[in-house]
Length: 208
Image 1 (cartoon, rainbow, N blue to C red):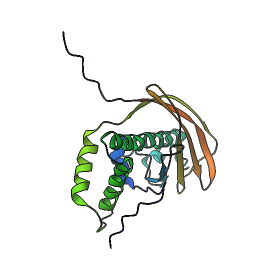
Image 2: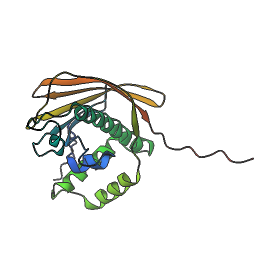
Image 3: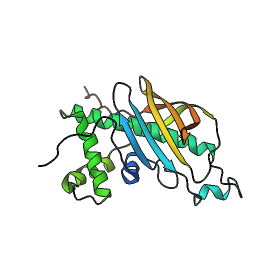
Image 4: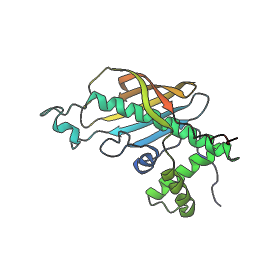
C-alpha cells in the first residue's frame, strides 16, 4: 500500500542540487549546502547549513597559514538563507494562487530531491515540469537594502555553519528577516537583513 502521509511540519530537507535551483548564486559563492527544515506558520522560519572545507578557494588569501573563514561569507550565507525562506514562502503562495494546496509546491521540491538522490520513488514527469518552471522564474528577492549583523566568534575550516532565518516583517515591497549563524550550538553571528521583493510585472493599462 502506497504511503501518502505527509512529513510533519518543518521536516522539509533539500540538498545542494535543489538549493542551487532556488538561489541565483553559483559556486564558489553558493553558501548553503542544504535546507535542514522549513516552517511556514505561525512564524515562517528556515534552517540551513554549510560545511567548510580546507579546500575552499577563499583560504588562499584569508589568511595564508590560517584557515579562518571570512566573516563576509558568513553574512552572505545568512543572506542566502533568508532568500531561501522568502522563496519557499513564494512557492507556497503560488500554489495557493493557482487554486491548489500550498504544500503541493514543497512536495514537488521534495520529489526533486529524490531525483537528485537517485531514489526509486522519484516521479520523473513531475520533476521535469518543476525543473522547467524553476529555471524560467526569476528570484523573488533582490539585493539586500540593509544589513545589520554582528560577528561574534571566528569560524574555521572543518566546522559546519548552521543558519537560521526567521521572517520579522513585511513593509510594502520590503521584507525583513532575523538571521543567525552558529557552530556546534555556539552563535557566531546574528542580526537582521532587509531586502526588496520582486513582484510580478503588472500589465500596462490599455491605451485610450
